[in-house]
Image 1 (cartoon, helix red, strand yellow):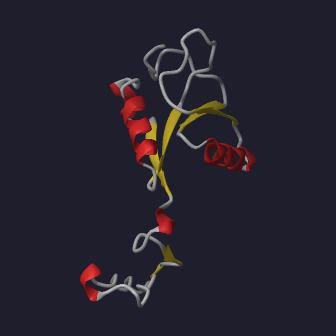
Image 2 (image 1 turned 120 degrees about the horizontal axis):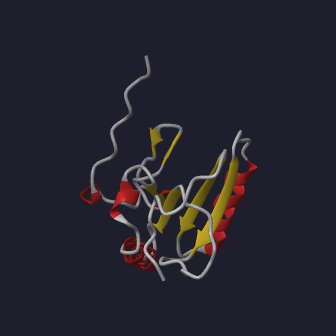
Length: 139
């Protein structure tokens, strides 16, 4: 098992490799399929991993971007990403790492539709918090 470093291999010509790291296989596969369907002038490769570190005995391409996928409803998902971060070199965080949070639309008030905040269901009391303000009008 080894530390993931951004410059450990030479880049491929017109090629990008993305590593998706997360605990939910189905979600990672769906995201990878969506990315690969998009038209791109370069070749895109997407690799999936439940966690880091990656096995060191495997010959793999240079990784250009690491996407950590966190399910907001799963404590295990967050813990998995926290443990995986220990195996990523600090220089990777300069534009080569991002975090994708999923599951936000299942919890109020984080979800909105077309820029309009959702209204609180009537069963919630006023003590639960104020309604979200309306977004400013577009010019």
